[in-house]
Image (tube, rainbow, N blue to C red):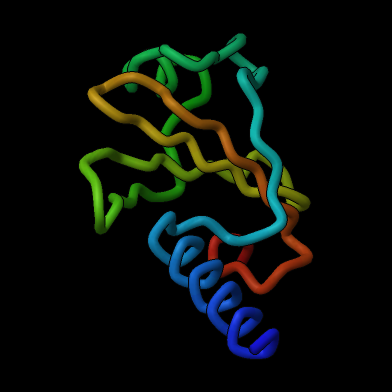
Length: 104
């Protein structure tokens, strides 16, 4: 019984992370300071691009509307800026020590 429960939890965790399109073991922030200034939750896409420059790539959610702009400011971390309804809703950073294609 416990084994089935653990397998179910692992499956749901994997599905949840895959649906989010974020690598695991990252950190969330309410703001990030780029060379051009500070970006915060609630900012718009043009504000982020003006402050931090062009992203290395853009992605979209499979299960919900929204855009994800992906930045790599240095060799150690990748930053995912998620927008819903044209407003920044999440800033998520991961270490490049993980198997992450955005770190290559």
